[in-house]
Image (cartoon, rainbow, N blue to C red; front, side, top):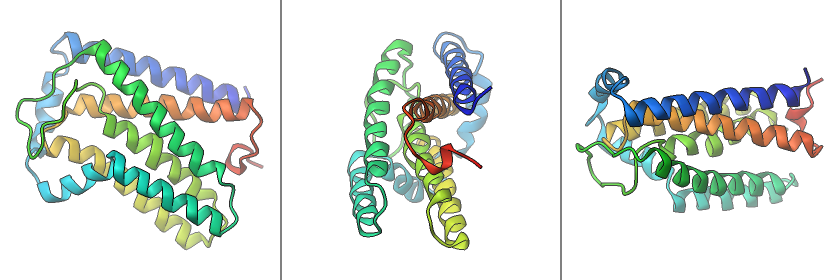
Length: 210
């Protein structure tokens, strides 16, 4: 099985797990105990949680996208990489909003700070953590920079991804199952995107391991 075929297979597995989780979350109480246990983080370090949540919203993501574009231009790296990541983020969030209408799960009632509109499953922030910050983690691991800097960047991005997921529960904006759903959706989306780039024979270093 080729790398492309494995990526498509993983994408389908992630997508199937996402659908099963969504059905359970939207139509049964099977996940109630799991969600209740995870609600223990609600109200913890709300100021920090607000920062993580803010980083997953539109304006900060646009700012990160512009800075990354300028950095790639300055260091003569392919500009299509930050542009493709930003486009993937936009498209995935549009897809998330449509999927939310399908499952139509109400948000938790005990939200803090701001009350986000729309349905709860899946978490758009959790999807962003994978599609945007997770893809940048992959890019960081293959950039032509010193290995210590590379691992510091990758570690910081991974910690930030976890922080975003935690923040949505800490602020009472999502259930744990919503966050897991967003993570599965993001993984399905990202693996499918990489498989598509392989199909199109886009010359990306991390798609062609030696």
